[in-house]
View 1 (tube, rainbow, N blue to C red):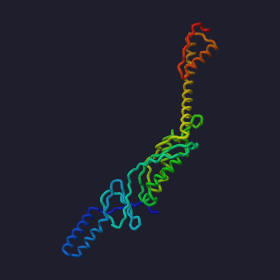
View 2: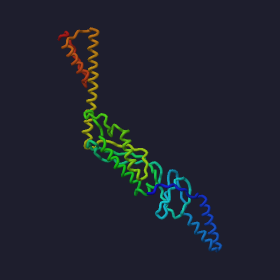
View 3: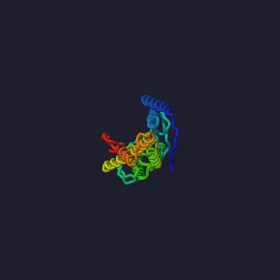
View 4: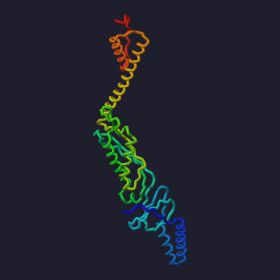
Length: 285
């Protein structure tokens, strides 16, 4: 199998001067009845298809009757064999934002996902001849890679799953992006494509389970918040009892301590403001 071959071609300005001179002499000779000058005229026009431009970050792949001759990456105005077929391949970085596709994550939940890919051609021979259409190849392989990636990781994990350290599509952005970039690099290497960056562009649960998963996420958040509230409430009750005992403000037996703890926990853990009740009697009533 051949590989990319960088070649040098002739300076176009020098051959342009030769071509103009040949055409001018040919026209002058024909007007004077010198038929041999017609050969110079024909030669000048024969030279014209050999001129071509190579713009910055572009290249020309040269073929001669189906045989790969080489690739010109140097910028400028050049001349080559007029029989060469010249195929333009851009070396610029390109962005690709894939369509949102519905796939199942590792847990079997349907999700909507898309990828953003930044790529460029690294090997012009592979891009031109190893695949039919390298731009379409990038689109198809990006779609396949993101489908495979989604099946390897869950969308999210929950505390009750006991997998807090597991890599997920939603939380582990860097790890997932690295895995996606590696997968795409392996797939696109045969087309001579270099992956500059790959990451998840869109991620969400599919519409049919979005509401249910939202409720589950909300429930998990509420439980976590309640856990923090209870921890804080216990700490505050403990501090209150210690301060009352230390400063000997009031003597409380076990029954009264239990009642005080119960009242404080209700007040501190409630999601609504407590309604105060004034006790106009003694401490025992």
